[in-house]
Image (cartoon, rainbow, N blue to C red):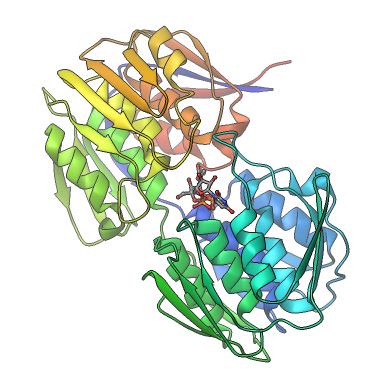
Length: 418
Ligand code: EPU
């Protein structure tokens, strides 16, 4: 087991280069099997979630070549066999193999995906979409068989603008006969990135980034070269670190427009930002004001940033209010932040943070990826040593977090313990 040890109180100065977006890369990698030729994806983050997807690709017989930030994938010899639970349970995004294999072979057999325990996270909207395209879904416990004699374009309305369901339906519909229209589609930048990838292969997708996506089915998809967009959640996390203890911390290789909701909240509490075309420089201010925030689908405030942002709220004067509308169980950082000295109460999906409270280092546990990021944020400003257990969660989504933070002045170490 690995732990992270942080000695708090060091100012962060220098440049952090943001990696490719996890939530884009984890869809692009399974999507690549739709191509009939080699596909090159660059700016792929080196995180354990992308490693786990490459393991599934290799299990299916796909040739995977990794050269620093690029992945070259060749699915010519893919065998469409059942993906075992031991592989699909490693991460949430294994569900994109459902759409991709169904779209290519009209059949997929696999287990329910894994991922962070932040709520019930059903996949009913994905399955409803596949059924609308003509597939039959058979469930046996955690195992799913989804197959179709023919996939036909359909009009699909999503009850909720789900990121996963929108992408999975695009993958399944891209080679279907006729036109598919997804209404109330999710609008996240990662969806645009996946649609662009498919279009680079020869798909005909319009409207990605709006709530209506149109997919005209094509027969063949070719190889292509594609780049993963910068990770807005990693960027947002480092912006929060900078607001907490930055002394001219530059967050580089980003698309600031993807961070508007966070930037607006940072501005509201009194953080000074210098926003460039592909970077933001952030420094800690002396005093912060309390705010209210509500997580929403894009372009609203990202649920993935709610947990680390809460640490910043502990340093704001007065009573801040947080409402989590996307997941029913995304406050698992709270008991640990309180153990470190915060004053946070929760009721259902609402939290109240009373600040400003000093934080002190102690032993805490990362219950999920972004709760882990919140604990790193807390550790960076806490007095003394913070030890974070279950670091595996953090490494699923933050590339080289120890190296990146060390380079800008943090005292952070990863340790292997029995
Ligand atoms: N939902 C359903 N039925 C479905 C699908 C979703 O009820 O069939 C519900 C979920 O239970 C949840 C809400 O809809 O309450 C949002 O789910 P969505 O499908 O949008 O999320 P996701 O695809 O499971 C992705 C990211 C998450 C991120 C959300 C929201 C990946 C692999 N995961 O999850 O990322 O929080 O979108 O933006 O792309 C993370 O990076 O830490 C993370 C959890």
